[in-house]
Image (cartoon, rainbow, N blue to C red; front, side, top):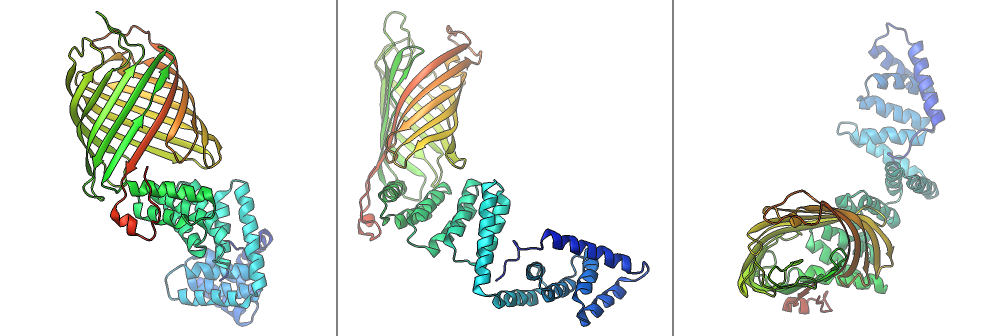
Amino acid sequence: MLSVSGAGCSSAARRAATDGRDAAARAAPAFESRDARKDRAYEWIRAKNWKQAVQSLDALIDEEPGDMRLRMERGYARLALGERAAAADEFGLVAREPGEFQAQARSALREIGSEETPEARDARRDALLNQGYEDLRKGEKREARAKFKAALLEDPSRTEVVKQLGYMSMADGDLLDAVKELEGAHHLAPLDYVTALELGYIYDSLHDEAGAERSFAAALPSPDPKTRQAAASALKNIRGRTRPLYADVYAAPSYTSRFADKIATLEASAGYKPTAEGALSFYLGGRYTQDSRSRSGTAPEIYSDNSAWAGPGIRIQPKGFNASLTADWGISWNLMRATAHPRATEADGRVLLSDYHSWGTGGRGFADAGGSVGYYSRYRDDVIGYVQLRAGIKAWDDGSSQFSLYMPVNVYKDGNRDFYNNAAEVGVGAEFQPATKLSLRVRAEYLHGAYMGIEGRDRNPYGPHYDDVRMVLIYAGHFAMPSAAEDTNPTRRRRFTW
């Protein structure tokens, strides 16, 4: 079928049409009724004076654009003049409007398309594609999209055009349209494993785990090792979320130049999720924190918490969401005695709501946001909130490792008015991930901070501002036991664990 959206008259033809409408309007007597002018147009049509007919119809349609009968007549007149693209535009407009002329307009469009030779259609399609890519190069995305869609009307089997539309939708953040277009491309080319992998990531972003698993599994047979490894890693991630038995590990040892302090942080838990579709899981967890600067004495100066904790907890995380609510209660062993923690052990509980989101900004740009708010019995029943924002670029990404530059913003706030929990920081940072299939990252940040001028029980001895260089090694791991069903599923020939 001929394109009706991307085709149109040339600028010279439009000027001629405008001049013709003006001439027709001037030639008609001022007192002539619309019916009389319609009769005059039909006389020109019967006489096959197509140029005069088009001029008369132009003036009539300008007065009443919704008259589909007149539009059909103008389409036939333009077709008789050899203006095929303009005629297709006219019939296309009528074909999109429900009514008595819709079927007739569609039939006219089919006849226009069938009269053309395949060579003519190929030439028009290629011209539209060239124009689309030129528009895209200039940054004129809307015009490029229109050209690509028009080219698809000429040849719906052009897989690369469907993919191009999908990637444009991804860059615009329209993931629903991207899924539709890339699914169409994958249907046309089932052995395009890169498209299958991309579809998996999009479905995962849309919290459609079934679609993500199906797409990642479709990418597994790829002969390219990078695509195959990425699909396998993503697939075990998806499947790991639904397995009943799991273990989580998070470690973030760090160094802060401000206090020349090294801080060790480790969290681990072993959990059970009764149902794959449910939001509730139970776990036994442990935490450990200790630093190198805090020291004991009659008036110890504490730079970081020094304790170990163990106990049971529950987690509520609805399927498809990053947000989670955890609550646990157990026993803390105080590795240092202080006024706030004079005993060897004490009861320790917390309730924490946390969330995280990330976005691609097209190309190598990225942004992410994370935060939490929670109740901590250990810190004098305090409620503490924390937000971290980052925006940056992936300066280097070879598919197996990444190096990123970013700007971080951190904000702390609490209910007890502790000065160290009421601050804001901004700075620059760099992150290196040596292996993208392993969640291990090294970060280095320079931060300028400012306290909010809030003081509670403890006075701020450090002044209103500070500068700090921080080095952090971050590891996050999720380990899950495959179910028996996965072992017998023929599409899951490998066993994955995190």
